[in-house]
Structure formats: C-alpha cells, structure tokens
Image (tube, rainbow, N blue to C red; front, top):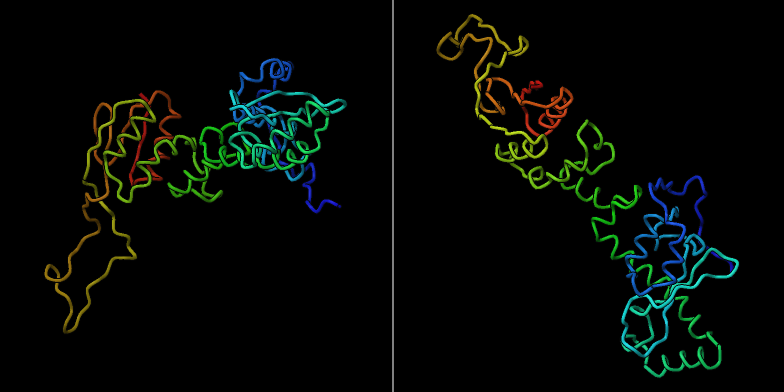
Amino acid sequence: MSESVTELPASDAPQINALHRLPDDFWLRLRAAPYRYDLFQLLRRLDAQGGQPYLLGRAPLPRHEMLRLGQEPSLSFAPSTLAKVTPRSGSPLHDVSILSFGLFGPNGPLPLHLTEYARERIYHHQDSTLTAFANLFHHRLTLLFYRAWADAQPTVSLDRPDNGSFNDYLSSLIGNGQPAQRQRDSINAHAKHFMAGHLIRHSRDPEGLSKILRGYFQVPVRIVENVPHWLRVDPREQARLKGGRGAPRLGNRRFSAWRCATCSTNSASNSARCRSRSMTVSCPAPSCASSCATGCASIWALNLSGRSS
C-alpha cells in the first residue's frame, strides 16, 4: 500500500538551530540504566537536542523520528517508565520499551491472559509477532500522548525556537497576537509577557505603570498624575466671528483662545524628582531611555522625555 502522506521538502522543513546536541555517550548511558530516566524526560530531551526537523508526535512519516517506542509485556506493576533500550543493527534507530503506557500489563485495557500469552511467545518461543503488531500502535499513541502533554507545558515551548505556542497565547492576551504586531520596538517580547497581568487590563492605572517600570528597569519609580499642560488649538479648528442677527457674541457664546489647559491624560514619573509635562526616569544607560519611551508610549498616552543619570 502506497503512503498518502505528503512529505515536506528539506528546504521547507523547520530549521533547528540547537545550541546543544546530545552527548556522544547518551544512548550508551541510557542503555546501561534506563530506570534512571523518565519517559517524558527522555522524549523532551530528544526533542530539544536531537536535531530533528520535526517535533516528536508531529512528523509526517516515522522515518523522521530517531526512536521506536513499544511496550514490554509484563504482569508486574511498573517500577519505572522505561524497561530497556536496544539499538537496531545497521540503523541509527533505537527501540525503547516502556512499561507505563500501552495495551498490556495490569493497567492495560486488554485481558491479562493476552499479556501472559504475548510474554510467553517472546521468552519461550522467540516469537514477537503479537508484540511487534501492538507496538505499531504503541509508538504512535505514545508520541501523541507526549505531544498533548508537551503542548500544555509553557517551559517545554522554550526548548526549541520553532515551538512558540505559549508565546502566541500570551501575545494574544496583550493584543499582539498577529505576527505583524510583534517586534515593533526594542522591548523584549518576554518582558511584555511577564507583565501580561497589567497589560490586559482595560483601564491603565498608575499602579500598574509604576510596577512595570520598577520591574523592567529595577529603579524606584513614582507616578504623579494629572500634571497640567497646554494644548495648542490648530488654526484649522479655529473659527471667526461674523456679522448679522444671531451672530455669537464674544465672551457669551464664543471665546477667543488659541490654546487651552488640560490635565486629564498627562502624567509624570521619576525616580529622583518630578518635572511637569514630562516623564523623567533615571536610567543606567542612554539606551534604557529609548526602551522606556517605547514601552510607555505603546501603553499610555504620555509625553515622555527620558534621560540617563
């Protein structure tokens, strides 16, 4: 039967730039003491350091995976998740037998006499046909079980650069869910995600602003609200008096003004002293002021002037 799965070309496969690879003696140590390892720990490490183009559980074909998972038929309760690891002759693949998940065993869905029968065929007749047939399903189902667990763990999503599911979740919470909305400024995306509890609020309160600035710059910050300043009226928005009946009178229904005072949206913040009509934050470096201006301008409508100490 021909395979109907369409394989991605090598150029279209995700490129993995892993900083660390598996040690040369990794499989030797694993074969010597498989009981020291957990199943999900092993699969997560292979995902992060195996150098494979696809995540375990998402490969279009089994040949893109560096191991084959199967269950060891056993009537005992599992003392560990891994039973044994054996290399295949003439192949880089390794067979990993597990005890914690599958059809056989005291916790499996099959009757116990089938587990006993499969074990008897292996140890007394050297016939692993039934076990090999069941392992066709064990391999796929175990990887899907692992993938369901890994996709729900925020720490696992940081193991590889092509697995940023939780970055997408947090970016959507703070209003940066679309790819075009990210990397628009000099502030690191993880710094915004860390402050997601303040950024998802509908009202921008000064307490949230001060906590964000204190946490990001590690300097004391004080917010001064409602700092008055002048708003200049654009000439295109100015009107002139006209004659005739019903014309507005100056001082009654019309006023002569080219600027007006307001204090509704302006704030001032400082770590040492406050200046009106601006936000002043003492920063350790001039580049810090640029990040502060970018972050505050994207969250609060502020007239910000940053300066280095």
